[in-house]
Length: 271
Ligand SMILES: [Ca+2]
Ligand SMILES: [Ca+2]
Ligand SMILES: [Ca+2]
Image 1 (cartoon, rainbow, N blue to C red):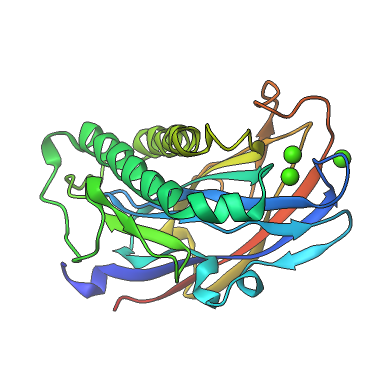
Image 2: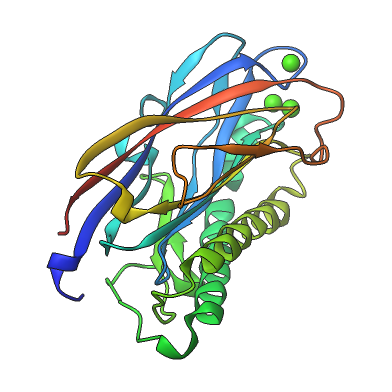
């Protein structure tokens, strides 16, 4: 770890999911989040929340869905004060029983952590260029052999790729795409035998740490629906969310849905 003067503690926490309209035609959706968050030097955390039963008009709290409130935290690490944070998330409805999901949970989290680590490592390495320096090692689990624990509901790991401080914008877009690709492949590997799960929305977001004040920012929200399932947010314009049309996602058929997910970002002194 380098000079802590140049470091901040960045924590991103999911707060609530608000359902305007479920994807399932009858009854509640089983809403969950799969994805990952990374910084420019390859530190990353994979996230897999357990399904939350939610119906039209309901608001549910992520932390209340688990025994441990920290389960709602999708990133919590020391980062450079001028770091770029990449967020890639999928919002999904499980169409398998909760028991089946629980049975596959560890395998899915393991695949997710491993694949995101690999994707982030290659993405960071390919963008590091000649200016790259050795990556940091915070002693966490992860890399290509990442692990997760059922008590926290999240997995985490640190990459070993070199650090880059230039070309961060291009690298960020590549990284969020790599994260989402890893999520899709990890989920498919594990849930191929579990019937299909529906993707309700995706987020690719970059955050410039320097743009955030110390303390808590937010709550912010991601809003998505069958009409606008994909959200892209650029670090250079953090307040403006651009949404774009994408082809119907696998398994979504003819259903309509609408959702919001809220989150907060905390910036504090590095630990
Ligand atoms: Ca469904
Ligand atoms: Ca469902
Ligand atoms: Ca509906």
